[in-house]
Image (cartoon, rainbow, N blue to C red; front, side, top):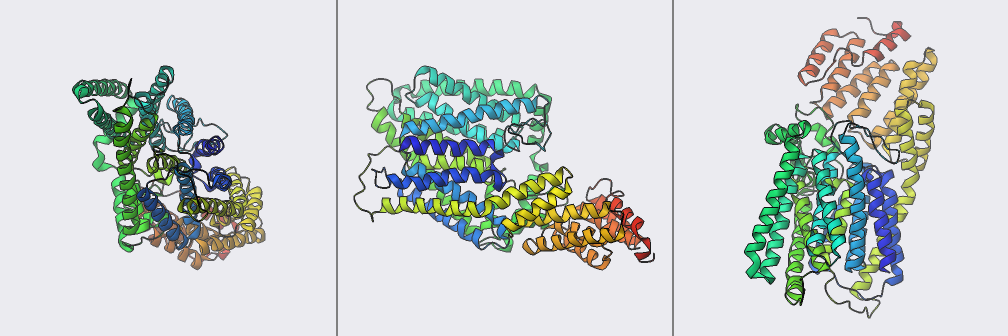
Length: 624
């Protein structure tokens, strides 16, 4: 049983890391399908002896997951909520499989070993990126962020740091406290160093801070354990820990201060008051005030972050740059309290387990005091400390790959596997019902994936075709995506954008109108599913301009500005529209507003489309 379910968990957790962390549904679905299949197949062992997980941990997990499911179900934009719904399903499946079936230390070590192997691969790719091969990726993916910051197999250095710092703590704990042979311990310690090298290369200031905090937490936990079973050597061990930490900090400081790029990141860390995160947080607090108790709904920060953006932020604020604040904004006080309850119960159970293992095994050890269960419990507790610190400034729990990793870590804390297995005597007992519920969730997840997967595949193909300027293929693939899943607004957008670009390039007036009308129809259908999206509204305005429906176009531009009043680019596009319809003074004021907000090249934005319209049939335009 353990071998089979462990293999599926390994496949799930490693595959999603290789697929850019599953940041698009099409790349997270394969991993979710693997863990859901494991949950269904676990029915074969439903009445096998069980080590019961901690009740409070289990309760807090089910309450949090249930609330997230409900809030995602009733959110105002269903497709935006879909990511959270599937992610919490996948995380709950990983958690329950770990807490109910994979409870022995040995299979857990195999999972940790596979995750460490992926960490080494992350750092290998990150070294190439850091050394100047900015776009270097594996498995056919393209890296849009071509900065010097290493992101490994993921799309952002912050998320790479969140993954590596957690695995490094597990590797250190295995090195210090496990019963493995010396060679494996040395390898584990070496990989921990490699992980911290990756954190440095990631350029993640949040990763630097959370690594320091979590290493300090790891050291304190080790000192606590030594204090329980070997008090006489506590001072010596404390000095050893202090010396090791001092040497690590000195070595790390030397490397970081002799690299120009990392020096710049550290300088920005010192100037944290100027960090754009602060403005993201202010927008999240504004969003929270709209619905303090239950939040505005899953995925809604995408457009409320734009609505409440500060002028200092001109990039798209997709996330809040802080898990706690984004959770508060989207899920309200109830969601925040449930999350804190979840964290508290698991931290408490981790500390309780460390204490009990130390008393039971280390204090009674006849030879060298070591314990595999202690290594996993202590490492997992330190990893949660890293997550709690990093989540203040980044959004690792919104990355499916990292969310599944921490679901495994929390599963180990929820059930450290130190008690004796108990026989399951009845089909209506709590363990059987819980394991049956796990299988039912697996079936529901597989059904959900099967109904949405092909739509996501076609939508991704349409997106890629659009980026490659293959507009006919994009239109065809978007049509397939719409047929497979009409609830996804992205294919309508891709279809509309392809038709809009073809329309502007078309020389025959009658055909231009046909393509623009198709684009308008596609954009309008997309807006029925996501009426708050500024990109859809601007493209709709441009398509309406192309079709000479100027009054409707003006309404679309104004609606876009209403949903994102501090984005300079929108004013620049609106200025091009106003100039097109013969209002140069109003256009000048809009361009001045765009320039004040930091938009560059305001005179050229939208001009190409306007010239195309003028060249097509200037007689149809209003007289200036």
